[in-house]
Length: 100
Image (tube, rainbow, N blue to C red):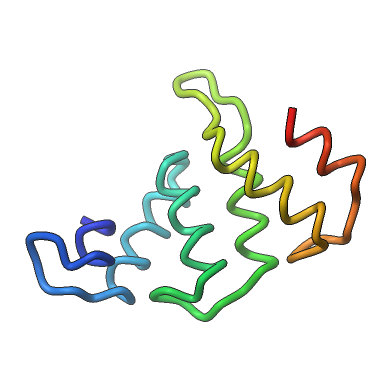
């Protein structure tokens, strides 16, 4: 529902409500929702833009889970955050580690 509200796909477009649904699912441990809410915080879609929260959610989505795999795109985005110092202190060694 969160993605549909963000995009307006099959329903009215409501980015704020969409982000609220994604944040709820992300808080419950959904890796895909964590990735999407991170992207929302990065772009400011439906939420106030916040690079620190974006990097936090990218990190959570990047972690290995017992019941689902880490999100590779989240690992990449977190590596970019460390490489550029966006939302986290700039750290090329950590960037390289997340790129692997």
